[in-house]
Length: 77
Image 1 (cartoon, helix red, strand yellow):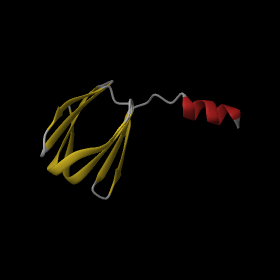
Image 2 (cartoon, rainbow, N blue to C red):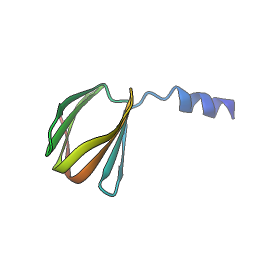
Image 3 (spheres, rainbow, N blue to C red):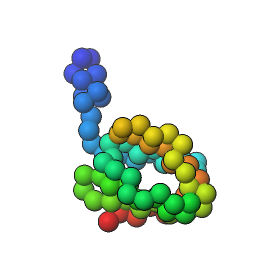
């Protein structure tokens, strides 16, 4: 049980969770650009580009963010 808790707390893997008109990004490195129709986020293996309409960051923590809006595509570079 303690091993599971330790793994959860020390988890530093990049991941994304997609919900209705929301994208939760965990363990990112930096927000590269922020526009109404495009958000670029740097992570350990490259950059993701979120494209859509009315995009905004509704929650921004040190290693977690919540992007909302009409998400049309997610690209990896």
